[in-house]
Image (cartoon, rainbow, N blue to C red):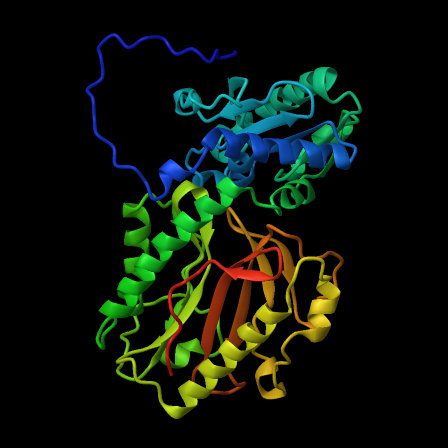
Length: 411
């Protein structure tokens, strides 16, 4: 079955309704934004001698075609995907009876119903459905990737095996999409600014509402509410902890009651308006009075970010950055964060630049119009508390330009 882009008229007219414009909506040229991103995907396919890709990851589907439907659900169910050839029509394979959701997107040439073959959706008919999907891919190959080599980002084992039996080679589309997403257009940067502004609105409210007797979950919910009511979408993690739960790092928010004088630290990981991520970390103290040990931890975290901020310029290799980066003292090194720098866009993106002992010397250079975050976690091994800070930046003409403006603590 095929769906045309024309939707049959309603039998009864819909009622008019009023919508409120989202942050910076008038500043974004959505046609340019979408065309830029799709063009980046196709150029990366050509660069890698590929003729087409199939994308299941909702973040990648959004980047390529700007179409959205149940993103979190489709992160763990192969029930929605798209086909992007270098030459030929873009095809969205949409979830059951949801074709109308993307009718307004002019970069989608055709909408077809998704063929699913997972056990949840099909039970003992899963293998039959898989055969139907394989035939669909074979049909696409005859017309749009005659080399029988296709890039796919997410796929289960039975599907890979079945494609290989048909002599269709599957290569990882992750490289294609990560490289496509590296360099941001002006419209993307505007989207990111809007997401950061929403996040910082939530962070400011978290700071002002923070008081003894709140639970970590109660504090964390403020960011969620702010994100949703301002057109945001979801939050990747729920990393917030207080007191002794801040060391070691990476504990998620709980029903722990926060006490006067405790550190509270968190990482937003917030997918906000237009699907772009605001990824900043802040550390407060309940009552906003740091003791001497807390001041030491906070100052070290600021020093790490400030030092690394001054290093990075367009053209600097990742390898050179690692050699010159701020040195974490031995008594804190065992509790180090997973990386010093990572890319940011629709979510955390390539590159992820790790500490030297973690195999951090990868190829690549910082380029103008990359967007990145600088990370720091300072918590002594066996220590009582820790501090997590993170700032978001644009790689500008002469160095890094700060994108996240919620003030750090004045200690």
